[in-house]
Length: 319
Ligand SMILES: [Zn+2]
Ligand SMILES: [Zn+2]
Image 1 (cartoon, helix red, strand yellow):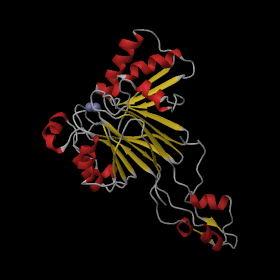
Image 2 (cartoon, rainbow, N blue to C red; image 1 turned 90 degrees about the vertical axis):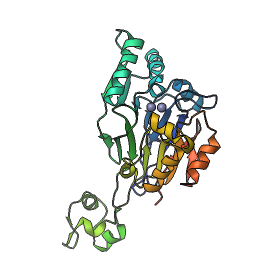
Image 3 (cartoon, rainbow, N blue to C red; image 1 turned 135 degrees about the horizontal axis):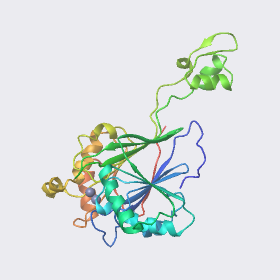
Image 4 (cartoon, rainbow, N blue to C red; image 1 turned 180 degrees about the vertical axis):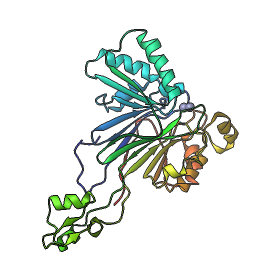
């Protein structure tokens, strides 16, 4: 897990993801239901919360601290049932005083029924519980990091994928600034902020003079259950890592179509079309063995892994 410190200006943000549950629809002996933790600096997000997520968190050793923001890809039961147990536990502790759950409107209605109808039954939550409806676009932004949601086609309305990204930036060219007589300090900060400044010799220096070409920041794309990929190519374009479902194999492509899921080959083709750095497949069905899934995907896109529960990945854009 990240140390929580701010990176140096030249250093790319490191995004980490721990797979807590990688099974489709029902758990298997080896795999729990969908849930992952994404973290960068000192921010953490639980993405989906299938049944059994609490125990997976315990087993992973990542701890419950700062797990107060949950992003839900869609409202199917294999992605949300764990919320009931998690809320019940959090309410018994005093360590967690707020819980934010973000989901599309339809999923949020079902989550509301689960939490207010079954868990709380008229009682007031013993922590600050906020259910927040996701609209496509930016969910959170702080300096140097952005979380956005984008629509995903699956079964039913309001399914979303998430982009965790460090915005693109232009590096400050120190030698140029020195040659132009701009000393370290407020003048350089103004140039980085896009304002022209007057150098020591009275010349005006423009930001253009001291900023290098645009560099894209570290970017992780997370897509949950998904029926088609043609509408995802642009949002995935050039990401360092893509986490996406691969519920079926090509031999059962008709079932994938019928139930609104992808085959391993379709997921790999998206990685090719969008020039992804590395592809991580999850939501693996008990009907196949992992090697078959890997084999089908790697024939199309070699830089692929089939995720297992408790796998941990680190994503940082190479300089
Ligand atoms: Zn699912
Ligand atoms: Zn689903």
